[in-house]
Length: 249
Ligand code: NAD
Image 1 (tube, rainbow, N blue to C red):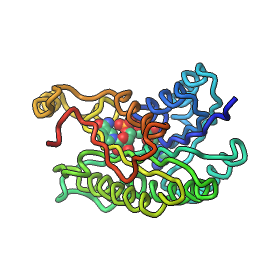
Image 2: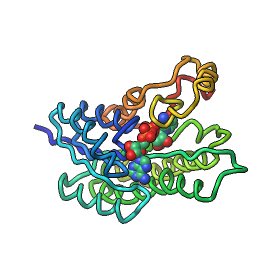
Image 3: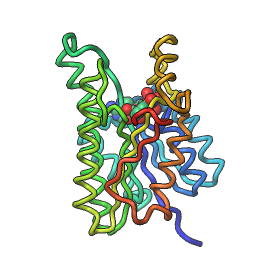
């Protein structure tokens, strides 16, 4: 029987990351699921783990902060000890600290940058070293449509998500010749905790500008991640796949 491949997903305790975890479990990947704190681990990640185990895969749950290089490094070592390989990395962990530029604090800029931007460097730097030895791997970065078009009130977040696209394309160019494919998904508005804070009136206005007239579901991002992690995307790298119900054009 073919060995199961291993996928590491950051921010897997809820929302898009949890949906990707469940979908990759269904696809037959052994999983490493990360979240930011002990509370999320006990409350949410263990639930996600339960749903993944139904598919007969192995799951390692861990709490590590993607913005902390040494925590990420220890985590990657732990994964190598348990599973030996890392075939897929999904850089999904993300946060928002929205506000108009005129009122944005340095702290809010730094915090968002550390998680959404430096976090992608940390994990890509460490996991690509494992993949380079294997001469194979897939890296999937969760960017956002606002990284392509900008958004008032999200100067910090948009800058990071645009930066993630730059990292995706550069990594694809550096790593492709060693069998590592790197792509980004740019979701539009997806129903998760992150978009729960948008008030109902604004939600209706946003929907008017979406051709499909609704927010997306986390599983609709997960199915694209499944494609990018699987055999059918073997000639796809350096791409940004927009999944937004037609909001951008
Ligand atoms: P969410 O708030 O539901 O989940 C975020 C996850 O990230 C959680 O599991 C959390 O534990 C984890 N996380 C946060 N900080 C972390 C840290 N420092 N270290 C490790 N893990 C950390 O959000 P979501 O909507 O599912 O977002 C997932 C990704 O999708 C994010 O990168 C987000 O920017 C992106 N995205 C979301 C939307 C949307 O509309 N929801 C749209 C475009 C892009």
